[in-house]
Image (cartoon, rainbow, N blue to C red; front, side, top):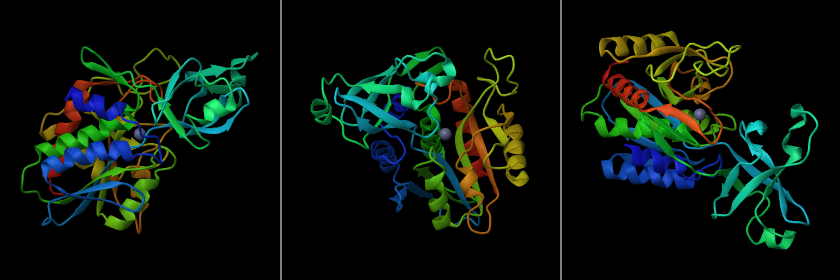
Length: 330
Ligand SMILES: [Zn+2]
């Protein structure tokens, strides 16, 4: 279990550049002999079962947040913009990795007030002494991600991009555990470009015309020292059944099915209302004439930092709940 989570989360895959993650996932899917293909924008679609009545999309996104080079100065320092929701406060002193293996450190210009810290005050130092030397390693438009530093401490795992490689892992594990006969036609979709606007899920759902949609992604928790932030979701108390976030109000039919299935199978679960943030369900539910959709969330601390943290028991319970949902008539 741990090895595959490590490989997935350490893989390089900022939005728009998911090929490494996709080949890792498709290698796993090939071992399981499921029919699969890559759609026009690059999402990987795995078909499971051909007889069932309802067509259900189950989506997890392959991409992660990242940085893109916009300018290289005469001394070889790189300026950059964000790919997705990068928090400037996490950047100074952080190491980043480019696809070709180049490593940089993020430096920060002097500021008077913390609120002045925006992307214009930050740069990447790749150890080049001038522009030409920098250009030998990195070009305008190249992207970087947080330096991988996977670690397990007891039942908890920290790594970059558990958002949403942990969702990709859950989908892969569910594929391994499904019985041969199922009541629904399932499409496991590993989507591209979620972090920049739920884009891969949008085109994949248009193509697949699902009757229902379910996204598997991480969600915030309220169990860390933040006296002013109230949220009931905690690490280690089971997968969260999303009720609402800024991209979707989950369909009651899907929410109730998730709750009934968890209770019937004695799988712990939590109810989630996320005040800010979205998932692929935001796109799926607005596809064509509308698709009743829900979200199964893996609780995660420190989302969009180099050290996102999940609990392995939550991961295991997320897998169990999704297996049971796949075996249920929708
Ligand atoms: Zn995500």
